[in-house]
Image (cartoon, rainbow, N blue to C red; front, side, top):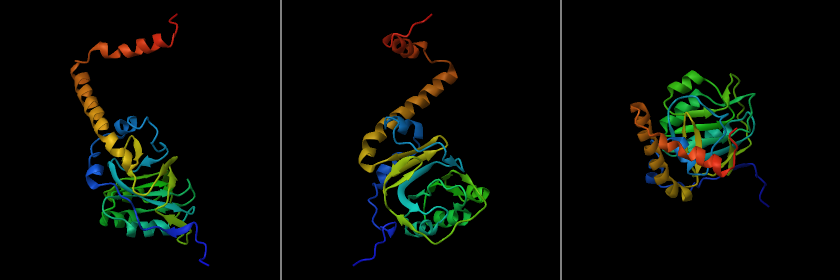
Length: 229
């Protein structure tokens, strides 16, 4: 009988989205992408960006024991260029699970970012490492390296389910998670909205925005029978 290793396993296969589909989201704000998911696939704002670099890639997921980073180290060595390491550290704030040297090693391997539902350390070094990192904050205490944990399983990160191979997009506004099967339907609408907002920004700057585009406010209030006293 095979020994039970549930909770201490590594799955190697990741059903990654096509590179072209992932790249189609580059340059689109996370807000515009979020709006196309009915605003349902965003991570918690408790995950703070340590840099102002945009994040884009496919998820390698890690479910790790609190205060332990053995499986995060392994995931870095398994990752392919273009992957993002997404970690459920269970919101643990007593120990960091990712630090500068790990981020630098990952960046050298082509990893495009980290999302850690837990703590990091070496914030200044991470900012200089050249890839985006999101976490709950920084703490000096390092982690254990004993396990258990799992790689490439469904996880919760920032209050959102993340599957291995999902597309993750992040910037200073927040993080959006997309299933590859949904992404093709979302990208064109998100880019259109992004371009509309850029155009509107120019019009505001030049004073050319018409007041008529605010008609929806009074129309909505009328439909809801809101009294004006």
